[in-house]
Structure formats: structure tokens, C-alpha cells
Amino acid sequence: MSGVEIRELEAFLALAQELHFGRAGERLYVSQSRVSQLLRSLEHRIGAPLVERTSRRVRLTPLGEGFLADLRPAYDALRATVDEARATARGAGGELRIGFQGTVDDHLGRAIARFEARYPDCAIDLVEIPLCDPFGPLRRQEVDCAVVLLPVAEEDLVLGPVFSRQPQTLAVSVRHPFAARDRLSAEELAECRLIGPAGDAPAYWRRAQAPDLTPGGLPVPAGPAVHTLQEGLSLAAADRGAMLLCRSTADYHGRHDSLAFVPVRGLPDSELGLVRRRLRPPARAEAFAEALGGS
Image 1: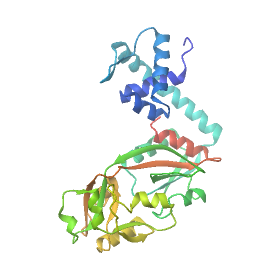
Image 2 (image 1 turned 90 degrees about the vertical axis):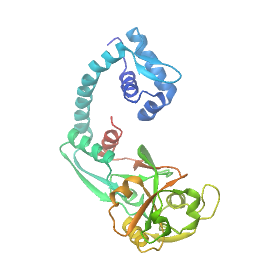
Image 3 (image 1 turned 135 degrees about the vertical axis):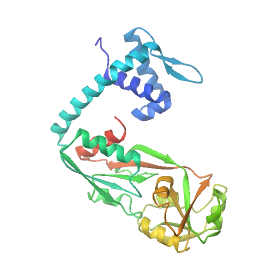
Image 4 (image 1 turned 60 degrees about the horizontal axis):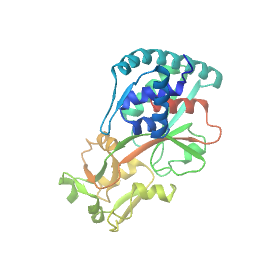
């Protein structure tokens, strides 16, 4: 193939899907400039531009469109062959235990389906992780990987892929004054007691899920500390406090008769990430990270 490298093809495929150099770099875990470098190298080998770049948009050239149509099925077949060989060589069979917080959203569900299609001999066991202990089950090897709320700043753990960026929502009792509101500002959190994770979780992680200050610096009263999501929702329903949730978890519990879920503007979006052990992670966990990343 005249020296074409697989990474150049992967950069082109990612860019063709995202039509954005920054997002393509995030997808491949490389910098935007590295994506540009790989694309230029591929175009040099081919002898013509595959992508039109302007200050406002990125789109494929006619040659790029045809190249994509021919490349995608060939790349998918090659990847499937490599995945099958890798699973055999690295022992990706057996059982994969995936820890999760909150709910299994659509992105995670699709990744599980991709993994099962690639590794039909590997059984998947989904294990709910307590809200108060996002990293403990992984360290105790009770799970092989874990999907947790960000941030993650643990030296012995590896984070990635990151996905499911969503606005935050406040769960309150239907009797709470906020229940009738269409939306809230982050500064209004100073008017309610926030339910947060109990003390087993790292302090920085607990503050991210239940901040003690608004973005403007107003103190946010602390509500009860809970060990599980269900415990927090029950206390919110009993009007013992309010609880911040990601949008997918709020949607999942949206029919709860005793709770109202109100969007909050002005807070950082919530994000989920896959976490694995840095030392000797199971091969099946690494394979699932690839499936979750869409590769």
C-alpha cells in the first residue's frame, strides 16, 4: 500500500465521521495537530486532497467521499480479524465485570452490544457501584472496569474513553418550592441543602457531585451524605435535601411520583468515563475500552 500506515487511515476515518479536527483527536486520544499531520501524510501518499479545510468547516472532497466508501468496509473487516486474533492471544474470553454508577445509558448499551458481537465467548456481568465508593470495587478487583462520574484523578487508575456529556438536573421533592420551576440557575443552589456522597469517596470527587460553593462563590448548605443513589433519591423525595443528577439518570427516574427534576444552568456538564487499573488490567477490560470508544 505504498507505505500507508494504519494510523493515517484511522485519522482519516475519525475525521470523516467528526468533520472536526479537535473531536477527531479526542476520539483517537491524540492532539489536533497530530490528526492534521497524519492526514497530510495520507494525502501525500495518495497524491490529492481528501479533505477541504476552511476556517469555518471541514468536509470531504469528492475523492475523499469515494475513498471513505471503499475504505470503511475493508477497515472494518481488517479490524474484526485483528480483534479476533487479539482476543485469542490475550485471553479476552471468560467474563467481563463492568461496574457502573446510576444507569446504563444508550452509549454504554451500544458499546456492550459491540463488545458482545466481537467477543461472543466473553460473558458480561453488570455490577452497580455504590455512589459513595466509585473506585473501591475496581481496586478490590470486584470489577474489571468501571463507568463512573467524572472527575477522576487517581494515580493508580487509567481514565478513558470519556462520554455522555450532559447538563445537570436537580432532583427535589414535589413539595419543594423548586419543583414548579422550569429551570434553575446554579446560584440558586445556595437556597437548598445538597445531598452528596458519603465520606468513602475522595473529597475532590464528592465536591464535584455536591459542590459546597456556587460558581459565584455563595455557600451551598450540605445535606445528608448517602451511600447509594437510591438512598439519595429517597431522601430527596422525603424533602430532606436536593440531589444533583446527570440528565440520563434523571430521565430514567423521571416517572417517580414523589420527585421533580429541574434543569440547572451554570454548572459544568456531567460526564462519564471508563476507568481501569493502571497495572496489569485484564485484556477483556482493554478490549471493552476500545468498544466503548467506538473503535
